[in-house]
Image (cartoon, rainbow, N blue to C red; front, side):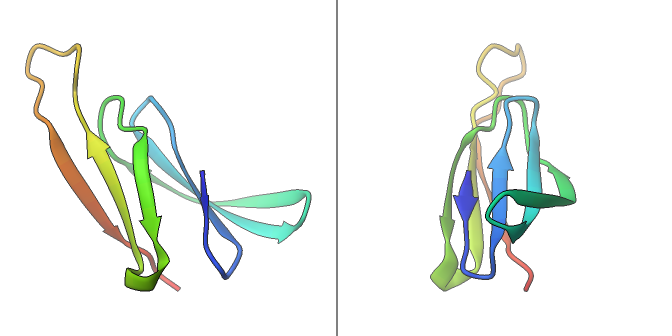
Length: 76
């Protein structure tokens, strides 16, 4: 999970989704968006200076595996 300055959180799950969350306060988050990534795409890094979230997709374990790097622009 990654947090950026405007209190947004980004969570990549193993089912191939990136979940966008907004922190309402220290204990409460609101779901903002789901963005499909890829099979087992959990390795990621947020670079707030570039407004980018980088997600590594391996596809390991699938017959048609195709490794790639997905780059998402973070919207304000």
